[in-house]
Image (cartoon, rainbow, N blue to C red):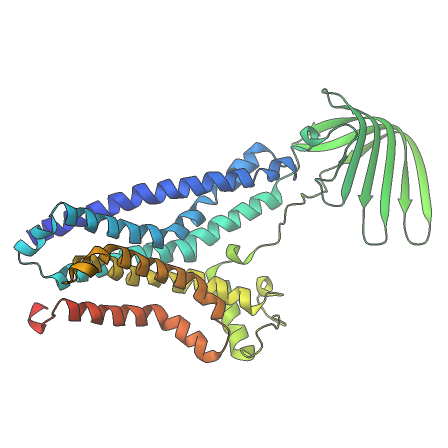
Length: 382
């Protein structure tokens, strides 16, 4: 009978969690999708690239909502059971309150594993795939971004100006400024041109113009009646250097270990002479913050589950009973905020590093002891 009761209880939590988390994630995803429209409007990517990129951001958003939504799920279900007097079913069947709390704590381990799986494996992989796709994509939306009498610089190191642009791809009075390096550039002027796509790559066929090569020492001008200008060698202005959140967890852990063992007192020093290519020029602060988000923060799932479970312990005072739910909700919210801000103090000292690393476990231990006291725990209950 106990198994059937707990099965229904856990099913209600999972159902509410799935509906709430997907709803919140979808709303945030839509908002982010709007913000990422500059991939098309400013950076020259196609709509296919845009939709693929924003789709790969879904796991990241979902993983960030788990702790809060899980807390709300337990809080809501227990409150619902309490209002409908369904908690009496547990007590009438001989289930002790400490057994109820223990079940929630054990059940929370599943969500802890889920979050670790997402943070350590799925999210970095999806973010890396998104970045690689952007890096390898061409500027196939460039023709639609060219406007008359406007300087267009959606391509890195390349600026366009067109006096007249017709819908069939015909350009008139074209100005192109290509920056080759710090001291060298190229200016191309043409009376007419046409955008041509071949093998999924764009190039310009230019007519009646000239090419001026500028460098630090001299200037060389060459006239032409017809020439092809290849655009495939240019990359998007979108940042393609991998961010910390896109690196594999093993890389980040090795970076942190490599840096911490040698330079833990120098918080601002940049990693040097590292065998890990992707960790070069990374700061210890960004490495430690990312490692904390992936590995330590999920453990706050355990403490917020205990806080939500403490709803079953109602104070004897009628005055405090009026604010019991609000207090529990505020405590849970405070712990969630604490999980977010504690990484800011991660590198203050060596002792602070160790404290923040074990802080979730300390909170779980002390709060569990408080629950044992409030439930009038006896060894015979185990």
